[in-house]
Amino acid sequence: MIESDRLRPYAVHPSRTRGRIVCEEESRHRSPHQRDRDRILHSAAFRKLMHKTQVFVAHEGDYYRTRLTHSLEVAQIARSAARSLGLNEDLAEAVALAHDLGHTPFGHAGEDALDAAMSAYGGFDHNAQALRIVTHLERRYADFDGLNLTWETLEGLVKHNGPLLSPGITRADLPFAIRDLGAGFDLELDTHASLEAQIAALADDIAYNVHDLDDGLQASFFTLDELHDLPLIGPILADVDALYPGTAPRRRKHEALRRLFSVMVEDLMRETVSRIERAAPDSAIAVRRHPAPLAAFSGSMIEGMNGIRAFLKARMYRHFRVNRMTVKAHAVIAEMFPLLLGMPNLLPEDWAAEAADLDRTGKARLVADYIAGMTDRYALDEHRRMTDPYTRC
Image 1 (cartoon, rainbow, N blue to C red):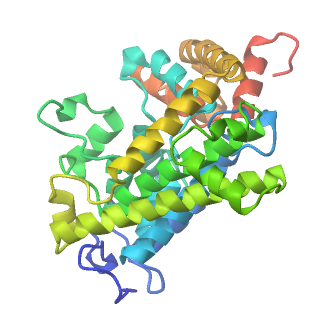
Image 2: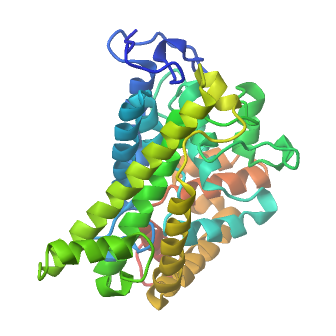
């Protein structure tokens, strides 16, 4: 077992892992959480993220970020922050790399469409789908389905945004993949996740705020000068202009966004260190049982980020080009889902064979798995093959 002597008491120590659903002999050369990270990187679901987008459709341009590039950027932030805080870097990176595995084609528009299609069969949730992928749908190993990840990585994947159970929410209210796993492999859904997972969740916030600004500028949804009145980025842009008057637009944009990125990371580190010092957790268990998250942004940073999100919502997420993509995504999934559910023999042979032994709810979940696993381009092509009489099957 590889154990780092620099981990703080409140970090998740590899030698104290709670194990895997299926017992395995651990590696002499990699910690359990390094193996988790490597299994995620080598999974088919992770490779597909290359051709799944967040806001734009994949064929609109090579510049815009995909789920894969976003996941790598989140992992970089999470790993760096974990190192500075004396946490388990491999666990933070594993959670960050896995956090988007369950996303559908066409970003949030695709998820909304698939959730609507599944409304009579338990709905669709991308976090639950990520768990389903790593515990069931990846079928690469002879001894088990899924990736057989450690308890700590599964916990981080499910609970990175906070506890799932509360006085008003019971296990029966949870998505079925999370509910069913919890019954046999208790992830303590009423507690917070590890600090490593909390850091990964906030790294996601940093990445998508900065990078959606970048993509929005690239798409000409707004100009850099229009950001002068926004919180956080506005003062930064003023400083850049004062320090580098007349600089080229591309350098000006990169310098401003680079500084915004740094400001967010530094705020996260300061606030988290402050909370750790006040709470003084002596173990990872104490972190989980603390009444509030220990990784957090400051109040002023949250206010500033909310201002940026409001701007992006008005100027980017509701732009007519994005609205058109949303309509297309709904149409593609809304037409494919009932066709495949009603005629499972339209599925590829291995999927159709599995559907044969399922009841209608099981068939619906299988169709959702099939559609959710599609890339943007494959979903468009598959829809065309099923609905366009002039396209070869």
